Structure formats: C-alpha cells, structure tokens
Image (tube, rainbow, N blue to C red):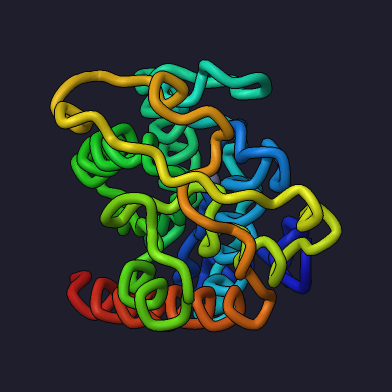
Length: 242
Ligand SMILES: [Zn+2]
C-alpha cells in the first residue's frame, strides 16, 4: 500500500477526533482473460480508493477482496461470495467504523456484481447512524468514451477491455501480460440483463472488448477523472451532513 498516515492506531485516534472519513475498496476474485490477473478488480479498487483517500485526507482501509462474481463462475479462478455474505461483511465493517466514531464511510466498488449488496448495506448502515456514500467509479463512462480508442463490448460494460487494462497498466503494470491480450466482441443474447446469465455461455475468452490499445497513459487519464468525480461527490455529500 502507498503513502497513508493512518496505518497506526495513535494516528487514527487523532484523525477520528477530527472527523475522518473511511474509504473502503470492494473488489472481486474473478477471471479477466489471459492477460489480466484474477485480482484485477481488487487491485483497481484499491488503487483508486488510495488516491481518493489521499485527496480527502481519509482513512484508507484494506479491500474486501471477494465479491459477488456468480456471472463469471464458468471460468477457472473465479471465487464468488453470495450477495448476502458481501452485504453482511459490509454491515459488520460499518458497525465497527461507527463504533470507532468515523464521520462516514465511502465505498469504492470495482466490480459490477457488488453494486446491489453494497447499496443494501449502505441503506442499513445509515439507519444505524453511519453515513455511507457508495461509489461505482463515477465519471468512468464519459472518460472511457473520451480517452479510449476501442469501443466497449456493451454500453457501460468494461471487463478485461481497454479500460480495465489501461487502469491496470497505470496502477500495477507488473501484473499485466500484454503479449497475451486479445479482443473478443461477443453477441449479447437479447435477454441479457433480463434473466440470470453466466457470461461464459456466450463468450469464450473472458475478454469483453479490445484490450490491445491499452496504455498506462490512458489509464492515468481514466483514473484521474474517476478520482476527481469521486472527490466532488464526497465533498457534496459531506456538506449535506448535519
Ligand atoms: Zn474487472
């Protein structure tokens, strides 16, 4: 983990007095084709969360490294937890944060399948008195359209493509095997999104889109936009707190 002063209890105790906000990355253990590692979503959420925490002077928490990845269980390497498990884990962590007296919790989600469990946990936590802002890479869709040269496999659908590969090249290039990068643009079945569907049933490589054009520079631009948009939302959210 990078530079953050809140890895030690006495430093945290002082920050809690000053109303610190906790920043929690939520990732997944999930296949990402032959060129990105199984831990991609966790690596990306952690990197983005750390930059957000540095900007807002937040407390950067270690990631939840497993998510609801049922849809990619057809490939080797995916290990999924149920939505209930993820929701319950977030509730437990949130209760602990509330007990410590953090001013609020920001979740930084790196995996689509986690959205619903996170939103449900957030709802339960605000009822306990802990304000929660759950972020799903705000600004990503506009940044992808502006900075990427390949088109996404589906609207708002980024998986092992130019977007995720560029972000990995910016944050953890040692984990990327560009020599193995290959494109796949599957035909999404008409009922995709309207029925539970595992992705291996219509995609062979696990790649959705074209990762070959990915660069660290593109990744930096995308991450910069996500961090800027996240910080803006956090500031608005904090202003609205009593
Ligand atoms: Zn991913």
